[in-house]
Amino acid sequence: MQKMEMARVFHRDPEIMGGTPVFTGTRVPVQNFVDYLEGGESIEDFLAAFPTVKREQVIAFIEAAKESLLAPT
Image (cartoon, rainbow, N blue to C red; front, side, top):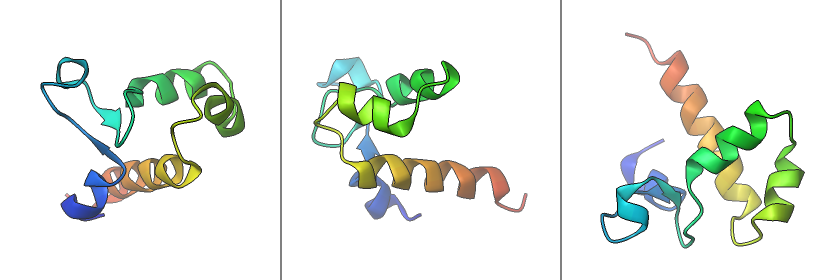
């Protein structure tokens, strides 16, 4: 995923949540999503709890993480 595409999914801004990565257009930290998954919750549970985050953003975040992990070194 290219940087421009990632900016539509999540970003960091020192003026928003002190620079914590958040889903673009929200104040919802990406870490909240990771915490939900680690706690055994589903994507649907996360989206219900944080309705300002779009499903497409969550899927794109997962894809970006996958690409990063599987990228050749």
